[in-house]
Length: 239
Image 1 (cartoon, rainbow, N blue to C red):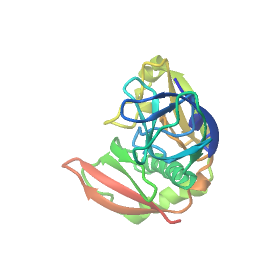
Image 2 (image 1 turned 90 degrees about the horizontal axis):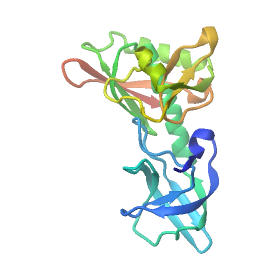
Image 3 (image 1 turned 180 degrees about the vertical axis):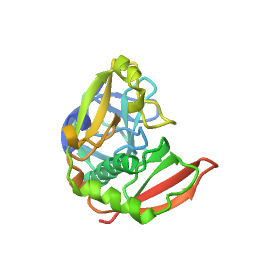
Image 4 (image 1 turned 120 degrees about the horizontal axis):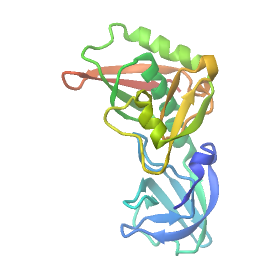
């Protein structure tokens, strides 16, 4: 399995890797991967591979059926041969927006403390779907509460627990539609705040900012009806 550089340091935008395999679909697998693969509502990273005598633009990053991470070329072309050393160049601007948005969605689930039925992270607009029969009475109040949490500049950190510990604490899981990955023995938790200032703790494999202040001002967009019990709440970054 590839070493997950995006998890070790989500702020890293360049790294050296070595090609260890190609997928039947034309993807590239590296021994160390800087790019986050699509999952948990967060899109796969894009960017570029550069090696002696060649370069490859990447449209996205995905997980293979056997759990590897495959880098997907933007267009069909010759791939770097197995064994080639490549420089990974992340589309950092896009990734950083995903990090800010993903952390903001965790805070949205604090402001609206209802079960989450779905979600999606995007660079310009993101959303959470809630098990919420009626739309919030005051959308402005929701926006103000969300930005107040962001302005507290709370630390965003990670912890790890065992599958058994997660099973014993089902309240940690906010999402009804997507179950946290189990079977590897450990589950990653993302914590916002610390000690008496902790506001959120939930399983998540995505990339996040180090402090909520990095998110910046967030605007609540449409609140849409998506079924009898579901409401979709969209958010936008102001800059």
